[in-house]
Length: 221
Image (tube, rainbow, N blue to C red; front, side, top):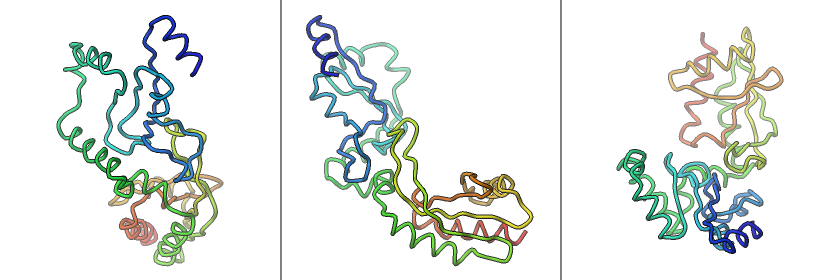
């Protein structure tokens, strides 16, 4: 990046970086190592940085631009801006997310709150769900695993977690996965080694009971 910045400035060519994930704070505190932030790029001399409003930023689906005011103003003046701009609801959600960053209130941003969960916290919740949902038909084990942050955001980063490994008498893993998706509240897991794996890092704590009820619903069919 330093070489690109030097070359761009030497030739008076604007340098744009598509950062993708949109991390606004150092994610080391959440266990994510080596993820560059928007400020890192701007401080390195990048003229315009593009990134997502969702993913690591944790807000609504949107595309953001940060950088030299004159370049951003020229892009805003382009006639395509009016066709591609987001709506007022997206702006409202984005404003709430960015205000949380300004106040350092990271716990109110769901994506960061989920990344901040410890393995021990997830294990306690998994025990609750497993104890409530076990039946003669549905068998549940709690196993070590990894939470994958995402393809477009920190693609190589994983966090240690505890997984619910579920099998159901009379159903293959694929059939069980399909049945879970068809619950009153769809439950999305992944299939590995003949089991359906559920990672409670991706579920709000108040939804743990929904997971248990979904498993019981399948056990009763």
